[in-house]
Structure formats: C-alpha cells, structure tokens
Length: 142
Image (tube, rainbow, N blue to C red; front, side, top):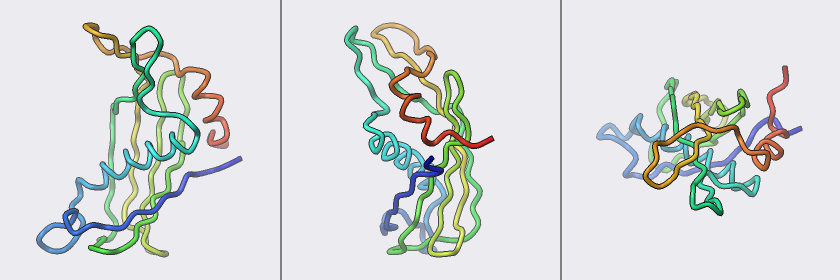
C-alpha cells in the first residue's frame, strides 16, 4: 500500500517576495498542483468530461497552511501529498513541504467531488467508483 505521493519543484524567482523568500500564497498553488500530479499518476483527472456534457470536478472547500521555515529562489522543494481521508463525497489531503531534511510548511486541503452541468448550480456527488478504486492504494491506515 502506498502511503504518499511525492513530487519536487524548484522555487522560481517570481515566486519570491522582496526579502527573497517564497510568498506564502504559492504554497496553496503548489498543494493544488501536487493534487493534479497525484491524480494524473493514477490515470485520473480533476476535470472529467462526461458523456451527458456534465463535468466532474473537485472544488476546494478548505485549505490551510502552516509555515515553518523559509524557502528561497532556486531551492528544490519536496512536496509530499498524503490522503488523510476518503469520504463519500470528499477527499482530504495533508501536504508536507521540505528542503532536504528541513521542514518548510505543512498544509491541509479538502476537496469535494461535484457535478457541473450547463446552466445548473454546482452540486456535490458521490465519488465515482473509477476514482475510489484507484485511491484505495492511498487509503490512510486506521
């Protein structure tokens, strides 16, 4: 059983502030990018067009991040995504950022499986079997 999905990214100059430190807002973007990479690694997408012209998507309902040490231009961040919870309609992730052995930030993100239909309000749905079957490998141990 896999316990986490890991990717890396290099800090770009445009992601830093005037002090040369990564601006906090980037960690939220990177959590979402890690989720997209995680889904692709499973052969899935966070945007799934259906035969009835609806779209299954995963909007965020909450995201938090605690910053522990600075990251700077050119440093390589390890981004580790762990599935904290697989609900009936939602997924919750923990995301840890490190540079080498040094913790940089820890975040949590909750996303809900939704159906988007033309001219209709967004509404939550049960996570489709094609997703839950592949996510089982990452189910947290109890």
